[in-house]
Amino acid sequence: MSLSLLCMIICFLILMVIGLPIAYNLMVTTLVYTLIAGFDPIQMAIKMYGGMNSFSYLAVPFFVMTGQLMLRGGLLELLIKFVNAWFGRFKGAIAIVTIGASLLMGSIVGLAVASAASLGAFLIPMMKKEGYSSPFSAAVMSSASLLGPIMPPSVLMILYCTAVGNTSITGIFMAAVTPAILITVLQCLVAHRVAKKRDYPSYGKSTPKEKIRATGRAVPALLLPVIILGGIFSGVFSITEASGAAVIYSAIIAFGVNRSVKLKDIPDMTIEAASTAGLVLILAGAGTAMAWGIANERVMEMISGPFSSMPQWLFLLCVNVLMLICGMFMDDYASTVILAPIIAPIAWSIGINPLHIGLVFCVNLVIGLATPPFGITLFVTSPLAGCKLEETVREAIPFLVVTIGVLLLVTFVPQVGLWLPNMMGYTS
Image 1 (cartoon, rainbow, N blue to C red):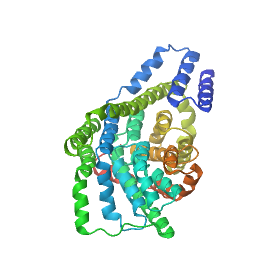
Image 2: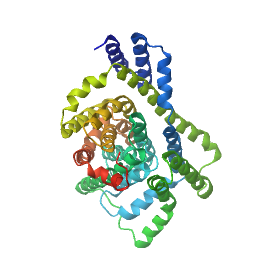
Image 3: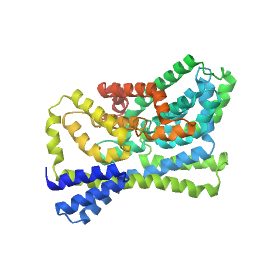
Image 4: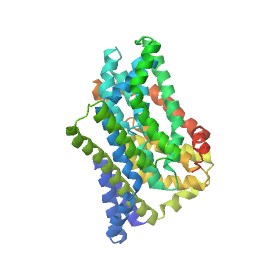
């Protein structure tokens, strides 16, 4: 191991321990490496610019803006009433509504924290009012919010595909649909079983007329995922064009039809979209620069030897363990820009489909968002419910178990995720 690589590793670990934000950590670490290795520092700036210079990243602020318009435009309440009309008769109805709404919200926003904060502020008090315990309410919301980055469109998957190349964003979106639906169904079954055991209430059975009325009112909101995903999967839109169309459509509904969003709300929504996009771009640029340093030190050659001799199932098992651990301690975006360019090429070299390893990688990191000790959705929902973090973790375990079960199914039975992209002609 060279002195420059050793200094890079030590600098990264020290800065991570002292709590420097990961984007600045990556930039400082790469700068230290650049100076010690004797490169011109301008090379770091060039690599950072190259990492940020991707047309696909334009979709990020548009999807965030769409989510803001959904929340402020009253469409969220319509989605909740729609899910409740169809599933409210089951025990644990409001928990099932929370999970179903998270799936629909995920197909629009693509961010776990945004779903946890926005839906949680509305639905956690509703669950508590129905007699649900505070920890269970927080656990349902933190686990359901994981559907945001799994159900397309996903900001994390856009970042992954741009970081590694050789992987279709549309293809990985298609691959994620089946796992997202499976996780939704299993989480609903867990919520129903717990609610039945604890005698949590249901809303009662809706009449056909009430179901039709709720569905009719929710049509504008339900059409948004159709526009986004239908446009992308049919080839009518690129990812970026679909995000722009989603903003236009949601703006027409929010400003023109519901009239619940005012011009004075635009600056706040713009700042929110810009903040999220800025974070993604900084991480992408800093991660690309660090990946350049890692490539210069031939780290890939050092680690690819042992891994390339593994059977595929053992390599995938190692990736699952590694990524679940990383997800517990590191931000999902940071883990992607650092580790994806290392893991993906090794997986390709031993014959693993690019869409398959991409799906396994991303779902692993998403699960980490609700896994202690640093699962960010746990930190978001616990204060909203007014309970301790450890209480939320205990209640979240059954939901995490079934979610990890779907991950293992996707990992070792690739066709669970790949059948849809293969049917549509996306093989990588």
